[in-house]
Image (tube, rainbow, N blue to C red):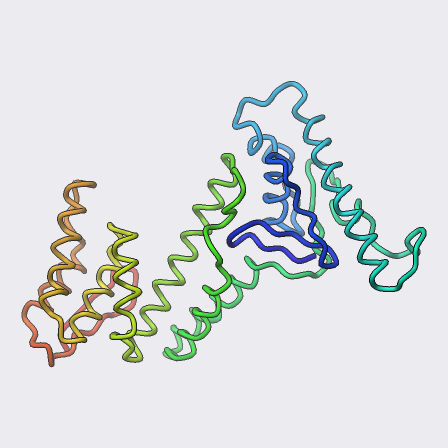
Length: 284
């Protein structure tokens, strides 16, 4: 089974889609697909579908959605077997059935991927390798790995699924992991001197994430290293105005240090960013 959730939902068995069109079965499949090969409790699925106000028939209705998904899986298995061996009739012993793929277990359901692909797992694997490369000082390798991880995203997670409480929470969590990988990939690119190449991307990101301090700090650094100190300082002032107006907060101490470093430095003086949770900056 191949699973994609980093964008539109796509779940395929033997290359055949098992993604339903009806909204609530899509929600069930989305949550099962995200947690493939793990038990998803019935309580979590009910909360996802009915947001704390389930009908009396909730469990029966959930079972109906599971049966609908199994029907799609059974069709996909049959088509895959027919394409694989050209034989009709009953599947030979040992081949997977729909109940083997979407398994009922005590307390919940499990979507058995059968060792197939998952874009979330591949993203986590590549991003983890990228973070380790950063820690080892291999900035070109980190940039490459993190860029590869981010390329798995084709849009917001579950972009075409009307999510409930559980999926909305998972969508926010996944978006945070994407932003962390993006932040580190930009940091790696800055470390290898790609400041000019980053300017267009950072212009868009600073506009999209108007209160994200790390991205604004990276934008300031890229502008300064490109000989555009005045614009770098303008970025700081716009961010400060937004933080004060919308959140009632001043920029962090780390960002204020970066602003002072740029203000005091000439364009030829390198301003160096240190990568930690309280990103420090200094004039080199």
